[in-house]
Amino acid sequence: MDPNLRNLKDFLTLYNKITELCFGRCVDNFNGRVLSNTENICVNHCVNKFARFNQAMMKVYVEVQTQLNQKRLKELEEQQKLLDQKSLQLPISPTEKSAPLRTDQNLPA
Image 1 (cartoon, helix red, strand yellow):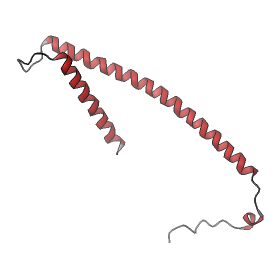
Image 2 (tube, helix red, strand yellow):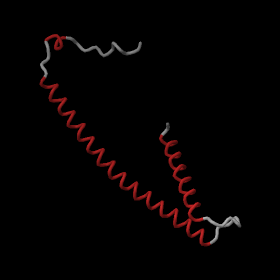
Image 3 (tube, rainbow, N blue to C red):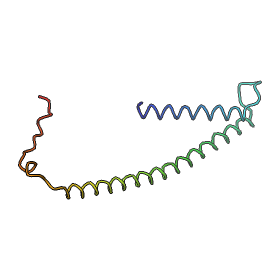
Image 4 (cartoon, rainbow, N blue to C red):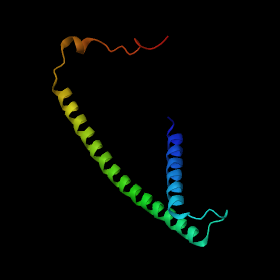
């Protein structure tokens, strides 16, 4: 799935959940089309609360993800060093020294 489409889907899912939750918590009078002042304040507080929570959670996620990425990068660099050291330690046979490399064997005509 396209990452932009997935992000939009995730956003809309979160938006719908917040809307449903805040509506259920705050709206209790169905006699009119307009929210009462109390309902309006409640909805604003509810949405702001979830927005702040989501922002704080994303901040922690970014910090943890950055640490994990740095750790993975360090591990990959160490693995590459080990592979480089092993390749330097392997003796090269006389046939490998004299045989020219052919890079055009797998190329399409």
